Image: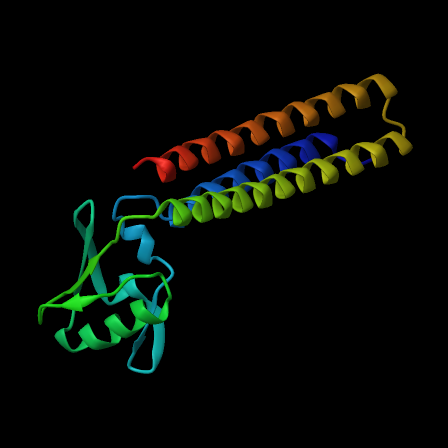
Length: 186
């Protein structure tokens, strides 16, 4: 007989991880203020190895419009600048001989709308993941019904899965609403 409790538990774990992934992805979507997370995807050539920027430098925000990237080794300044330009984030870095300075430009209304669309796409991707977890749990319940699970117990389990789906969809919507508000704030 199929273990429906494990299927429900796996479903919830899958949905929880999906929402956590959404949170992480939304931190990468740029809002108005400078945030070190903006540079998370930047990879730097470090002696022939492509490594994350955070492994060769410290990243700090000086104020709401400036990021400072202080390399552990001074000779890494040029490769860091090239990596930031190559990442196509819309930044134009400069350096003062000791660190790379990134002035984060103000977002235009058009750019804000594009970022909101990106955030919506990430949220929709998360909802697809949530529905996938729901479908797997429902399939496990159907299989258990064929193996002799009582109909009323199956209905209770299906209701539990639907409740989980609604809960995690709401969490995804809440994260999206917060990010949208953050992006549109001037």
